[in-house]
Image (cartoon, rainbow, N blue to C red; front, side, top):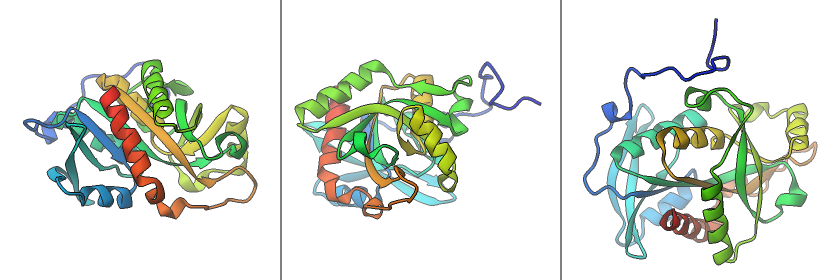
Length: 254
């Protein structure tokens, strides 16, 4: 028996796709921004002039998609669901709605405090310790981010005066199985962070030919034998304006 982890080619075609479940919407913004933080989305969706323009519907309920005007450009934004499969499903559906450029940001676990410190993290590649990416790209230990979009993110961060560090991230499916041995192994391989979506989102963006930028900010720390929760439960709200402004600028630059 061969699973997706052993197959060398991606089988085609799919029985059904995003366009079979999601209608293309007239005048849907080309640029779409997303984050995992509900407090950040609630903060920005409450601003004057922001309108709800669509919804994702699933057994989990209804997830709104909003539109905001930033520097005279319409930009869509919504809250991504945590975990690669759900995050990717929404990404696929927002592309079907009409999005053509995508920016994602969120928190991560820090594997190397000395290098990350208070920097924004620019993922240059992701270790594929999840399953979703294998449905979009043939098996490989890692997936690299597009150098062009990395440069766009670096330019935006420099222009906005934000310090940053570039490095590898570890994408895992199992938040409660980040074992000491696995953490040590990934750190030795050069991983600065651990999260749950990057490898899959990189794979889908390549498969669908969608320009894609992702940046991370450190939350909890896995840099020692004792886990430190730090400001994980603040969900980025303290720096909401900073992160959203960076995402908007990346969207305009794509």
